[in-house]
Length: 138
Image 1 (tube, rainbow, N blue to C red):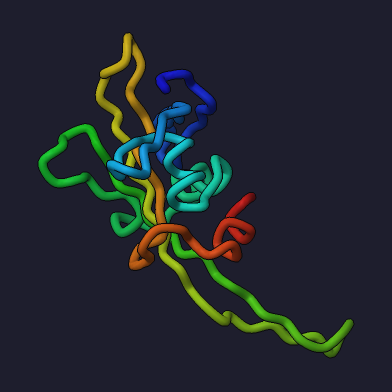
Image 2 (image 1 turned 90 degrees about the horizontal axis):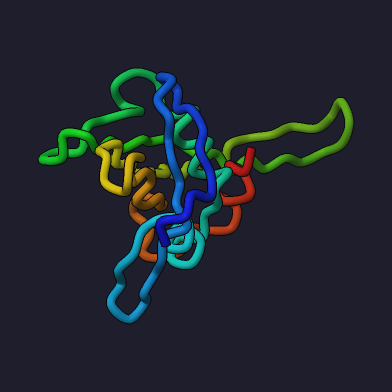
């Protein structure tokens, strides 16, 4: 579960690590990409987008209370519906879904931080709607 499957820079230039992780649905325990994909229906690209393009300012990146090296990132994913064709096409925002990603920057696994613990849709029990995953896969 500790194998690295991805790494990138967040909006502030900090290195974010993503590990394979695991997910045990019986105990509802886990972390990393396996939990993010299996429980929350998100992808590595969705997590990367959340950490690279969070909400502006302090609202987008907040320290997790009680954990000095853990940060939560927040971004809003827009579901856009369009109608019409060519120059007559109009689009509007149909839904907005907040996505949160939690990242532990403390050194815990040999020399590198544990990294992304989880990412999920706020206010959604279990799996994010497919449109969220599809919209944020940039």
